[in-house]
Length: 256
Ligand SMILES: Nc1ncnc2c1ncn2[C@@H]1O[C@H](COP(=O)(O)OP(=O)(O)OP(=O)(O)O)[C@@H](O)[C@H]1O
Ligand SMILES: [Mg+2]
Image 1 (tube, protein in one colour):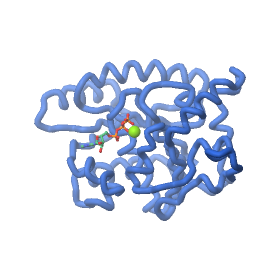
Image 2 (cartoon, rainbow, N blue to C red; image 1 turned 45 degrees about the horizontal axis):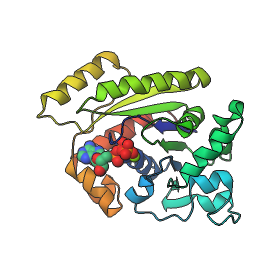
Image 3 (cartoon, rainbow, N blue to C red; image 1 turned 180 degrees about the horizontal axis):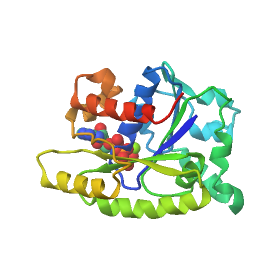
């Protein structure tokens, strides 16, 4: 099973867009995928038009809002054929508090220990990370072994990347299996010089990890409003073609 964290400390760079479209694309090709939303904003469920009752908080604690017992199975929501979701949400604030209270030597690895699927039951575990950096982000990077880092080709994104790399290095010091596998340029606007300049910098420093850019595409921002992936909302859109290339690249990097 491959465990891929879609992570970047900077907000609004396309992490959730990438997570749901990658997860859906892999699932629709027959891979069994569990998408884990690690963000209090609960965006992954919204982007997929799903309304799960429970999510990651209940999965880890096995407790519902009123203290009732919730089994782990009940917390995993089938969104599409082959695509399951562990939703995020505001309860993750409590999960972070709880993690913060655990003994120092175990607090960073608790999530990874909980997320051990039955052998052969899943092909991909995809984490949609929150912006920023906290105890939950560390847990995710302890549980994952590949990082896909979306970088917006606009604004001060290289600064954000530098900050994120410092975090990533501190995580790699604790998890030697963790690799920066993909740098995904997003919001590529052909008409702006800035987009080309940032892309040239990325090409220079991350030739191996660099994926083909995801263009700025209004359809990509409309699809979540309808609770759909780009492949369901408008499969002919440039955003669908761009994400299709990413899915093929990810698939080609690993067997089943
Ligand atoms: N390539 C794109 N073209 C146009 N709009 C996009 C593109 N990618 C994402 N968007 C839109 O930009 C906004 C931010 O994207 P998204 O929520 O995926 O970012 P994020 O990194 O997950 O944000 P956060 O850090 O808040 O979790 C959303 O409204 C999304 O629909
Ligand atoms: Mg997000």
